[in-house]
Image: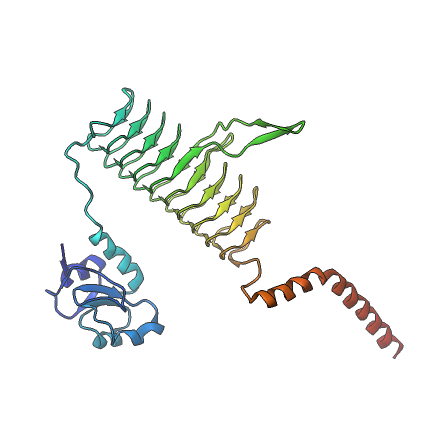
Amino acid sequence: MGYSLSEIAAYVGGELLGDPDYEVASLGALDHATSNQLSFLSNPKYAGTLTASEAGAVLLRNKDDADKVRNAILVRNPYYAFAQVTQLFVAAKIDWAERVHASAVVHETAELADDVVLGPNVVIGAHTRIAEGCRIESGSVVGEGVEIAQGSSLAANVTLYRGVKIGQRCIIHSGAVIGADGFGFAPNNGAWQKIHQLGSVVIGDDVEVGANTTIDCGAIDNTVIGNGVKIDNLVQIAHNVVIGDNSAIAGCVGIAGSTTIGQSCTIAGGAGLAGHLVIGDQVHITAMSLVTRSIKQPGSYSSGTALDSTANWRKSAARLRRIEHMADQISKLEKQVKTLLTKG
């Protein structure tokens, strides 16, 4: 299904420059888009690609760029507008003949709103409550006492353990496991005693959890994910972690237990956070960083060494091993210089 440019301009609140009846069938990247596709330009340094683009229409910020394309829609933030338009082109969801598939297993004490959709082989545990507009796809397991608020969806093969609470309009992708035991063991004479995890996981509204991400339940208190948090694939969030509203966490991040992350933070791919830390609001951690101390001030933080040729990296590593000796030498030289200056 396509949309006219007038419909799209109205949807994003933009100013249309061009043919209002021009139909857009799909979306495309600026350098590969075809004449029936809509694209966008958010970074001015790529403005030179506009004249070569075959896109039928482009979301733009700068009116001066409009004469370089067939049609334009002027908006304040083209990237955000493009994100809005993607909602129009989401593939239609499967309309199963049965609202609750015949193979779904629903405990007699579970409470489901009338329009809840359950796919094949879904399992719903005792005393679970699922609100209006929710959709749970094939093979997902929702444990005892779980609460899922209005308009949330679980993709195929999601597992929610006992007592997990999911807010409104959340999206949980395939393979995610929420509420498994945290990694808690007490050492005793060379062996380990399991610490049974008694808390759960509470997820706010408008949260998205990526595929194969795991969020562990709390040991005593709950693990808490704030409103608007976006979590990528393959992220590990340990027990009793608290993540503030509107923070975003990229793939392969690991967050150890009892760490608190503030609001509007970003953690780039592969970063690791030690346990029992406090990360303030608006902190941005770059890729592959290792965070071993709390961060109180907003800003961008990095660790590790940048990529280099193996030969240069080995030289740098060798120098790092000598850094303490070098510091002692510098200290001695400073003292010698001060002595000479004093005598002079």
